[in-house]
Picture (cartoon, rainbow, N blue to C red):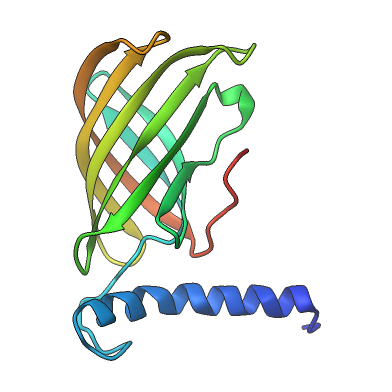
Length: 164
């Protein structure tokens, strides 16, 4: 393997991402890094899966960043964009909340939703979450609040850049 600055930087980033969960969670419990049993820690990286609403299920691809932000990894033609925040609530749990904007092909907002969920890791590569979503029309008027759930699998321990 060639040792270019980019290769070295990638290797360092991967190693750091692998250490962060154990270090952060162990520190939270007052234990030295790597010594806390059952530690999973932050959901840093890219996750894909399904988000379930009462009347439908949608595919999701999210990127969780070390600074506590998250974003939907979408393309403009998807007609949706989303951003939010996450926060650890325990050794294997975290909360996430945010907002999604729906738009048409001209970029005009057609509606939005806010969400708040409590998530729990199921092993190192899966998390499930439950919460609620509130839908708004294009003018920002509340339409409905519904229960939602998600089941996501980790695809990468490195977060992806958020769409601009």
